[in-house]
Amino acid sequence: MKKKTVSFSLCTIWSTARYHMIHEPVPYGPRPGTIWSTARYHMVYGPVPRHYFIVVFSCLSADASRRPKYSSHIKSRCFKSLGCYSIEYPFNNTYFLPDSPRRINTRFWIYPPNSYKKKSLRLDRDYNKIYKASLPTKVIIPGFNPYHENFAWVDEMANELQKTEPMNVIIVDWSGGAGFPYEQAVANTRVVGKQIANLLIHLNPAHAKRRFMKLHLIGHSLGAHIASYTANHLKHVYRISGLDPAGPNFQDTVPKVRLDADDADFVDVIHTDGAMFLAIKGFGTMKPMGDVDFYPNGGKRQPGCQGTWLDLAIRAYNTGIKNASNSVGCSHSRAIFLYIESIKSTCFTAVECDNSQNFTLGKCKNGEYITMGYHLRKNVHKGSYFLNTLGRRPYCGYNYIIDMYVAQNTTLHGVYIRIVGTKGISSKRHISGDPISTGYGNKVGTVLLAHRNLGEIKQVLVLYAPESRFRFFLYKSTIQVLGITVTDVTHHSRFKSCNKMTIASDSRVVFHKKDSNTNCI
Image (cartoon, rainbow, N blue to C red; front, side, top):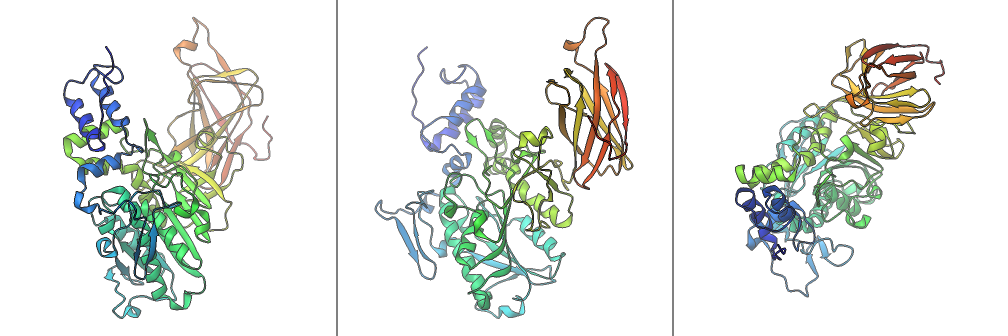
C-alpha cells in the first residue's frame, strides 16, 4: 500500500502520537499495524526543526497570550539599566526576544550567614544587616520552570551550604520568565544574568572594579547559562558550577552564548542527561563546557530514572502532562541532588578518562582521581571525569577498577569477579559485557560499583561459568589467569595478586593479596 503523506503541525505531533497509542493505527509509518511504532513515528518525524519534547509541551501548555507579537523586522529589545538584546548571530539560538523585566519579575532571596531562614533581598532596604560583603557568597540559579513551582531543592541546597561555613546564600527566583514556551525562557536568560550582575555590583561596590574572589555561582539547566552571562558582566568570578547545563538551543552555539570554561577562574560541570532516545535529545548535553566535566553513569540516563519516551507518552496520557514532564526530568535533575549530596560527603570520586566506554572497560590511562561536587578544588588536572553512582539517595557508591591479566590466546566468556574486604563483600561483576578474546599479557578490565565501603581488600574471588554455547559434551574448558589488580578509586589504594591460576569451568578460585612491589606479567 502506498504510504500516505500527512502534514503535521507542531501542536498536533504529540496528540496524534497519543491518539494512536490507544486507537487503531493508520496504515503508514514504520511497520504498519503496530500501535507503538506508529506512535513512535509521529513522535520523531514532522516539520519541527528541533524534535525536543519540551517544545511539544510548549504547544500544549503555553498561554498564547504570553508570546509577544513582534514585527518581523524587530531584531532587538532594550531595557533601562539592563541594555539591549538582539536575536542576530551569535544569539540566534532562539526566535524570541526577551520578555520585559516586569514580566520576568525576577526576585532575590537571601539566607544570611549562620541563618536557616531566608529573607527577601530588596535593594531599597537596609541590606547591610543581612548581607556581609566580607564573607563568601553563593548564588543558586534554577533553570526551566514550566509550572512556576517553588523548587524545594533550592532551600535544601542553601541549608546544606550554610552548614559548611559562614556565608551569604542568594537564591534567584525568575519563575515568571522561566516557563513555557521554552524558547522564550531561553531568550529571558540573558536579562536575568544581567539582573544578577547588577545586584552583586550593588551589594559589593568595592568589588565592581576588581575580582569577585569569593563569589560562587551555582546554576542548573538554563541557570547554568545564566551564571555564564552574569560572570561575563562582572570582572572575574571565582567559580561557576554548572549542573547539567541545558542542551536544547545551546548545544552547537559559540562559547559566548553558553557556559564555557573562560567564564570564571574555575568552572566545573556535572552532566546527567545527555542521552538520546530515537531522534530526541536529552535536556542536558554531553559537550564539555568547563575546566572539569563530570559524567556520572556516563552522563546520560541515570539509574533509578525511567527511560524511554514511549514510557513517557503513556505516563502523559494516564497521569497528565505535568507528572510526565517531572518523570522525564529525572535524569536532568539528578545533577542537583548529586551536588547537594556532595556538600555533605566527599565520596563521589571520579576517574579521568577519554570516554564512558573506556571507563566502563577499565581503560583509563591517566589514573587521575578527583572529588566531584562542592568540595572540588581548582588546582586539579583539567579534563573529563567519570564515575558510577547508585540510583537513590544518597547516591554514593564505591567504584573499584578491576584489571585481569590472562595468558596467551585465552578466550574469556562467563567470568565473574567478587571483591572481599574487611568491611564487606561485593556483588559479583561480569568481567566483560561481551565475551572477548585476548592475547598474552593483555588485560581485560571493568568497573565494579559497591553499595558500601568494602574496607581493605583482602581477596578477589573469580568464578568461571561459561555460557552453554561455549560448552562441549564431557569437556571442561579452562582459562589461565596471570594476575589481578583492583584499584579502590575512593581511597586511592590498590590490591594486587600475581598468582598464576588455571580455572576450570564451573569452579571458583581465590586470589590473595601479595606484596605490592610484585610485578605482574
